[in-house]
Structures are given as C-alpha cells and as structure tokens.
Amino acid sequence: MKKIITTKNAPAPIGPYNQAVLKGNMLFTSGQIAIDPVTGLLNTGDIKEETKTVMENIKAVLKEADMSFENVLKTSIFISDMNNFAAINEVYATYFNEATAPARETVEVANLPKYVNVEISVIAAL
Image 1: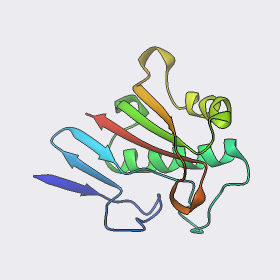
Image 2 (image 1 turned 45 degrees about the vertical axis):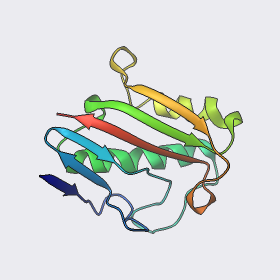
Image 3 (image 1 turned 120 degrees about the vertical axis):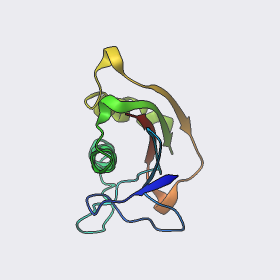
Image 4 (image 1 turned 135 degrees about the vertical axis):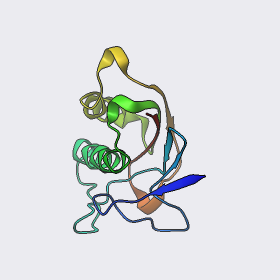
C-alpha cells in the first residue's frame, strides 16, 4: 500500500497530486519549485536563491518521510535556461556528498509551472 507524504514545511500541491508518495522503502517526490511554504510567494529573483528554496522544499518533504539527502538515489532537474546550469549546480552540490551523490538528469524545457526557472524532483529509499 502506498502512503501519502505531506508537510506544511513545503508548498501545498497546486493540482491533483501529492508532495510525495512512499511505497515500501521507496519515496517518489513531486517536482518542487521555489514557492516559499510560509508566504506562498515565489522566490525567483536570483537563480541561486531560487534553487536553494527548491532544495529546502525537497529537504522538508524528505524529512517528513524520515529521510535526508543521503537517501536520494536519483534527481530530475528541469531548467528553463541551460545558461543557469552552473549556478543551479553550485547550490545543488551543497546538499550532497560528492562521493555518494545520486544519479541525475538535467533537462532544459520550454516552460515550467508558474514560469519558474528550475524544478527538481527526487527518488529516495530507506
């Protein structure tokens, strides 16, 4: 049976989906964007701050599932401009130990929800 993971420390879903689903020991998160969970406002002024907000939202969802970034097996990063890759990667790297970092893909897309610059989802396991 699957278990729905929800926390007030990450943005509430803006559609028919959940923040994350736990099945057995596997956690699948929905994509997180830079919505401040306290104010509900987007944080898109600076790409590094935007990425940090995204990663903190993921951190909150992981914590709700009793996990951390050490549990992450794979990430999917969607960005609206590949020119932002280096700045996004710089912030992203601070959340992982390089020796045990997860598998990842980074894809440039035409557009993202609410016209943000970056969206990230993860798959993690206990």
